[in-house]
Length: 169
Image (tube, rainbow, N blue to C red):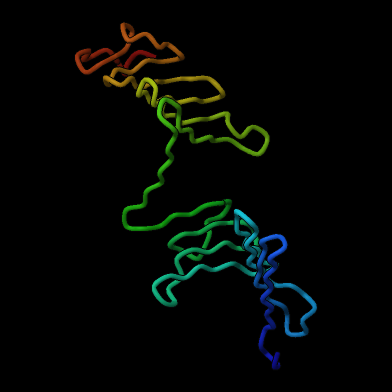
C-alpha cells in the first residue's frame, strides 16, 4: 500500500465456507476492520472509529460507533443512548409468532426487565409492568384493569364516566 492508503486483504476458503475482507493500518500489522461471511451468518467488526453503512450513493444511513451505539438517520448518539432512530415517521416493529407476546423490556444492567411493555397476541391485550409487577392492562375490547386484575367484569370502559375524582388523594 502506498503512504496514506490502507492495506486490504480478501480471503476465501472452501474448506469451511468462510470468506473475509480485512482492512489494515498502513504498515499492514494492525487489523482496523473486518467483514466476515461464515457459513450461515455475517460478522462486521471494527477496531476504532465507527462502522458506517451507506445507501443511495454516499449517503450515510446507519452507524455503529466504537462505544456500541447504533444510530440510524443520525451520526450523533445522545448521552447514554444505545440506539437512536431519527426519521420523519420512525417505526420500530416487534413481531411474535401467533399466540405469543411481543415484549419491550426496560430497566438497567442489574435488572433489565423490571419494566415491560407487552402485547399478548393470544388475548390481544397490552400490558404495562413497573417494578416487576403488572400495573395496568388494556383488554382487547378497550377496557382497562389495574394491578394484575384480569377480569373483564372489573374493567373500566368507555361507559363509566366520572369514575376518577382528582380531588381525592
